[in-house]
Image 1 (tube, rainbow, N blue to C red):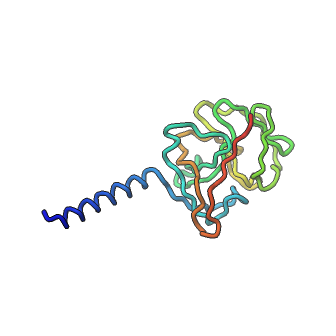
Image 2 (image 1 turned 180 degrees about the horizontal axis):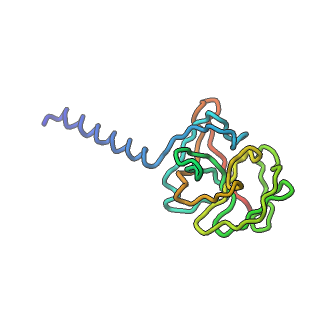
Image 3 (image 1 turned 180 degrees about the vertical axis):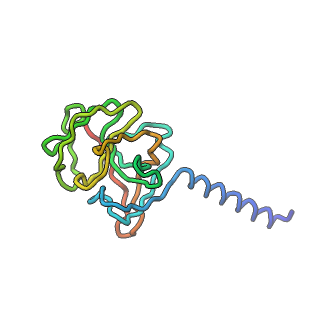
Length: 173
């Protein structure tokens, strides 16, 4: 085999390995709804890390991509609010986790409807959209399992004018 053909084959193998590595570790998603406005808009394209949650649990305040519990073929984007074992309640336009009000500077407007106190089941998460008054989220009666989490949203990469790192928020509880 000539050196030239060997170099081409090595280049192809390296390209395939890099492509497959990226395909299994990074996902790209288009946002369709308004549940994360004003931070993430419809038609934004998101890059997500699909690996980190295999090594650690999602944290409160992280923005995630998930499989919709109500429509299997649909992906959603939400913010993790409650972790397994947490109690979550919404009253007087405030979110309480374990009886502590959380500061949410990222939401579009205060929540209009209350949500009675619930405990997040083991191996489950309570998620909300940042645009609380239009978001279909855990308040509609479902908790998210870790198996339904696709990845951690990292970057808005399109449109170019909105390119930015997605802010995750850490609550002091």
